[in-house]
Length: 349
Ligand code: NAD
Ligand code: TYD
Image (tube, rainbow, N blue to C red; front, side, top):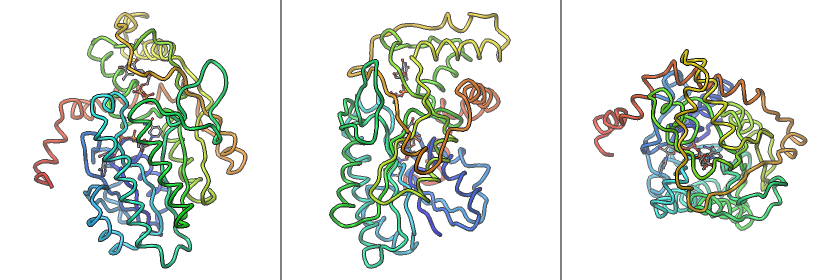
């Protein structure tokens, strides 16, 4: 079994690569990543010497390169995570999100279709998506697989579009696809532009914690290791053409989450109770800020038997511990040091 994982140097992708390498030593895993600001090979330092691992630096929007890679490699499956993933960046530069998330996905679909069309048996194209495609909930209700798409940010609009293309390739060309839409992930190796690692880093350095609006927005948080496990289950047991929602039934308003994080940080840093919370600073709300995301993952639980493994309190504490013991990783990422290394190594290729 040879699986192509795209975006494997990013946050979730690196956990998926690690999970597959460790769980399936007989599989070959090729990690295709363009190493944007969010891609960091240090995320895979503990597994990159394994004999069944291969890294390829390349761009999912480059069709000629992808066709060659598919022809040479005889992939049985694709797990597609490569994307621009940060909502705030999508507000500043929406076009980049269209290029990577929409055009990149279609280019990858074309490569898989061209290579596999003569024999689709045993093949699988697994597209990793987000619950943000469903838009925003009021105080009640959950996103199910039947919820109509209603994206509001350029990020979620680009992911919604890519999901539609993946389904269209199933319906039009019989490409064996599966899609999952997951809620907010947290854990080790997350780039410190997203809420949890950004705030951990700012608390360590006594910098303000910029809470958008009133901090009342609600997100449904899932430990990234549990997401990787769900991806394994869906890759192996999901049905072609199906969508699975992934989430931990774990809703937190931003301000409640931040208060919990501040309490954990005070304890870990030996600070008096309440010190970190004083860093909270309310700032102008994000444009088009979705109020609430919450996932109904009962289909995945019922049909494929997946359940999250740990509580949020435990997962958050493990995450804080990881960032505190990996200060060098965080410093390297915030200083951009790892990108200078890539420029030297790959010379802009
Ligand atoms: P990330 O930004 O940490 O990583 C994205 C990776 O894709 C990086 O390694 C980057 O170098 C690579 N990449 C970007 N453009 C590329 C290109 N043109 N060619 C090749 N590689 C490219 O993202 P993440 O948070 O790990 O998210 C991974 C996937 O999961 C995304 O598709 C995202 O939409 C989805 N998702 C994320 C979350 C979340 O909470 N982070 C939740 C649900 C779904
Ligand atoms: P984020 O981690 O960017 O994920 P997403 O926007 O994909 O849900 O943000 C999580 C929540 O935290 C979201 O409601 C926006 C909010 N937020 C802040 O209040 N301040 C910040 O500095 C960031 C990055 C996010």
